[in-house]
Amino acid sequence: MDNIPAIVETLVGRFPQQEYMYGGHNACPGCGAALAVRYMMKALQDKAVIVIPASCWSIISGVNPLRCLETVVLHCPFPAAAAVGSGIKKGLEAVGDLHTHVVVLAGDGGTFDIGIQGLSGAAERNEDILFVCYDNEAYMNTGMQKSSATPYGSVSTTTPPPRIKQNPKKDIMKIMAAHQIPYAATATIAFPEDLLAKVRRAMEVRGFRFLHILTPCPQGWGSPVEKTVELSRLAVQTCVFPLFEIEDGRRYRLTFCPDGPVPLENYFRLQKRFSSLDREQVELARESVNYCWEELRRKASVL
Ligand SMILES: Cc1ncc(C[n+]2csc(CCOP(=O)(O)OP(=O)(O)O)c2C)c(N)n1
Ligand SMILES: [Mg+2]
Image 1 (tube, rainbow, N blue to C red):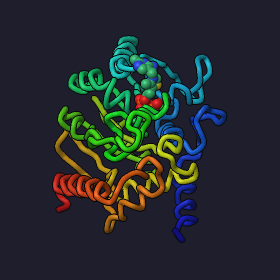
Image 2 (image 1 turned 120 degrees about the horizontal axis):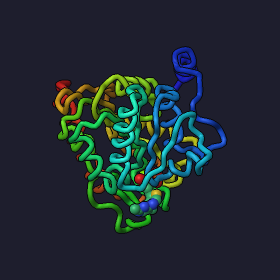
Image 3 (image 1 turned 135 degrees about the vertical axis):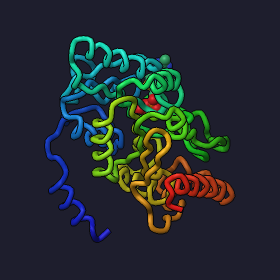
Image 4 (image 1 turned 90 degrees about the vertical axis):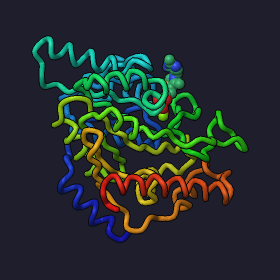
């Protein structure tokens, strides 16, 4: 980590300094979702309407008429986010506004589970919106109930030990690729330039765009608040959460290739939610991560 000051210096030089998210918001200390949106807003600036279904972000952004984002924010019912976003875009077009972006900002519950019907419909119709899923891997706002984005082996309030989550995390990127949408990508806050580049790329593309951002949650994951960025980095380095893009559901591109994956234990060790895994279960998790990583490398023609 000796090169951290150099990295910070480079970022300060190249990263937009203007903020579009105000301080005094309602996020918990160490909230990955707050940082993800802060970065995302640096690309969107005030050129987007943000649609937020029930989630931590409905709280973070503030209760109407207050808000912490320097743009228009609209709160909507949980399952309706993609449909509301699509309607707003059509409305803007109807009044001659062809420039304002519509961005749906939903949690993993609002994306993988409760919002998936509207999400699939909007993707299939190729609505001209950007759907951003910030994924903290559970229903955090209501107290860490498991979602279908919760990974295998995780403790949650609905999967307490010894009945830890038995099923794997749903592969939302495969589901989005199956819709053959023009652009889909993964990102995380430990790679802010990559995140910003992907938001910018998504803003250039017309049609349905999907961004899947991993955002650690210290409260839910049982991790130290100062480890949020490190955990995001470890998720990528262990191949738990690879960084990649998919165009038209076909062309895969890895945007970061770890040189020799970091052991999975380094990632698990920092989080209480994985503390009840035994050696055999860690091995199962490792096999699954390796399988998905090899499959992704084949699709991206890296193998
Ligand atoms: C139809 C409906 N069901 C349940 C709720 C209660 N609720 C509000 S936020 C939330 C959790 C959302 O989880 P997720 O989408 O992952 O976002 P996060 O809270 O993790 O940011 C739930 C269950 C609701 N508001 N509306
Ligand atoms: Mg969540």
